[in-house]
Length: 266
Ligand SMILES: [Zn+2]
Ligand SMILES: [Zn+2]
Image (cartoon, rainbow, N blue to C red):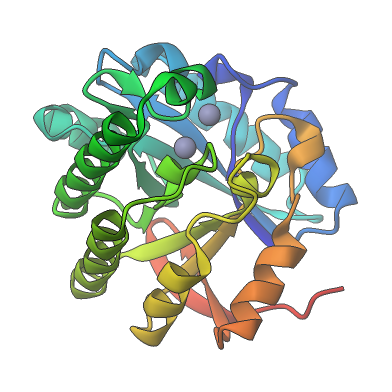
């Protein structure tokens, strides 16, 4: 199995040293992992991401793991970028400076609000939540138009706290998937949501089924912020994918994509 979404302590909200994540992946029998550390140039989210000055250290740390574990597991280097259109030139510069395998794009902040915050979500009235969802969809739409990433991470993470999404928001997400097909972007199946109140992978089955029908390449990731979470929920994700008729997963090396057959669940 492949886990293409693993964090490190550089993002300031994960625990454990990088080696413990790799060890956990080897123990879980994963064939391939990708570190996808948070990176952002948006002042709202920099506290939740590694500092630009830390990128060389991060890349070096992952390289060191690649070398040390090359006989046991394939390790990739990636970034999960909080895409803000005004930061595009600076983001492009960082991406081109290093040899990344995979760049993920995601939205965690909408108008300065952390959409993953449980406290914040609980305080919103239904109309306020729906308006937040609509603005989230607009930000994702904007992100998909930017030219420099490979995979959309946790597409419907706005459902994290278990509140139902309005119909027009669902429709907006389906349209985004149409656009992703045109832009040749991959979609991540993120198992983090299985442990959140949403109690489901990101994205939901309907969205996933639509993506599969359009032939959009898929990755799987645990969004692990602790070593114990590496590989968590992947078997469930694979089962869902197979049930929906997916046959392959996308693999990335130096941002070149290939397809590999989905491994049977153990
Ligand atoms: Zn995180
Ligand atoms: Zn994320």
